[in-house]
Amino acid sequence: MAFQPQASDPPRPLIPPRTVPIPQRIDVYHPDYPTRTKILALSVFPNSQGVSGIPLLILLDCCYIIAQNRNGKLRALSSDVDIAIADVWIPSGKYTYHVSGEFRYPICTNFLVWKIPEHLPARWLVMGSRTPTGSCRLSSLSTRVKVLDTACVLTGEISRLQACHLVPRAELAWWRHNGMNEALDNDYGVDSEQNVMTLRADLNASGMDEGHFVFAPHQGVGVVLCLTDIIRDLAEDHHLRCFTIADRLKPHCFFARFAWGLFKSQASVFASLPPDTKRVLIHPDLTKIIDDLKNQKRMKNLEKQTDLPAGTALDIDAMSSPASGDMAEGSADIDIESPKLDLFERVSLVDKDPVPENEAQWQSRAPVLRDLASRQDRLKTMYLPQVSELLSANIRIATVGEEDNEQVLSDDDECESVKLGLNKHDEVTDDSEAPPNLAQDSQHRDGLKTIHLLSDSFNTRMTGEEEECSDSEVEHRQEMVSQWLNEVAVYEAA
Image 1 (cartoon, rainbow, N blue to C red):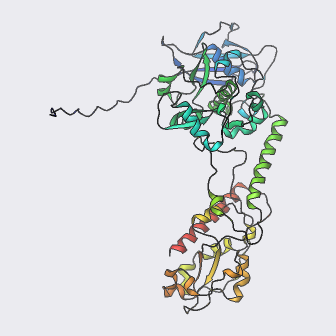
Image 2: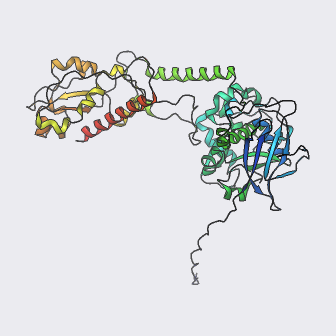
Image 3: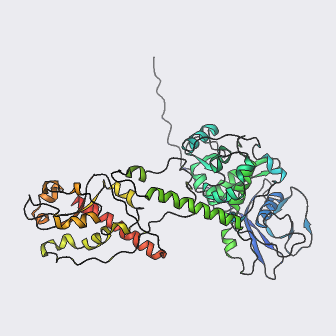
């Protein structure tokens, strides 16, 4: 077979930067205050006729949510005429939202306190199916959803995909308070397939999760709705464009995400509300749910920290490994109470023998190490999983004598060893068990006290009673433990 010489294609030219016009805005004000009180600010983009604006029904949905599900009418600012034509295009400008018969209606400024209506507006029913669907284990949810969707529901791309929740997993308290399991007729919670779809990874984390776009019905189909000017290049391609809605997805979840993204995008507007603005308050039942979730989280932590029967080895690697599940979204667990390392009050050091001059360079920071290592029963166990990363198990203080065969831990040191979590049978009795590089260095052997880690099972747990700490104190204690762990690694590598 003869091959004909072919000219090689030249490199394709650079893609020039896109020039996208800055979008205009629609501002909506509360009509019942003496000074203008802005309650909504949306970026709006041009339609096919080049007129920047937004469909009236979508704008009314936004106002409906901000007014805690109160139906109202829009008026142009300083006008007494309601805008009443359905599906009209509202151009950029300033408007007021009027609720009939209610003076100074309260403003909802937080998704958590917003209540999803018992009956969605009828036009939202096109956003998915109302037929109950099943779910699967969380460990396979992400993979299963991506297999079902096959591609990004916005762009159709098949790479860099993530399964993302419509109602974020961090909003578990909201989910329970609003009876979403009953509304969706399932028992799978936020991890139901009805609440998860596939997006390109950057559109999820840097787009939808930041409140830059949501989904809404428009003229009988679901479309993408961009809310901010941060992603105006994406808006040029996808604003008010149809997207793929799988039958398993539910209108309630899309309406909840619409509200969640709206509240997220309006954070700066709500922060600027005058102090006398009437706001929606948190419901007592919701407070109870949040408290229950906090208690459940504390109980789970306590179960991990409970003393085990004598002789039971801890699987520290299992403790330190992340829970299986869909971790791609960035809200892998409910953010009711962020797990922070909380150390209890440090005890003062007992007097130590003077450090020999030739050991000064090795002991310059040892008091901090001994302080943190002593009285382990006054430290929480939150940092223990990190110890396993240093191949740790038991923490010991080894006294290396002048002679190679001198016993490392003397009988006088046994009490301190017990405090540090050592078992009697774990005592080091021969210098050869010390790290080889330390045993070979005469400077280290000359009475040097050093901290090193061995690979035995960790049999002693640290316990203590909780106490209130300021944020600065918590941060200080976190820094101290971090420094301690770093120093252990330095001494081990020395």
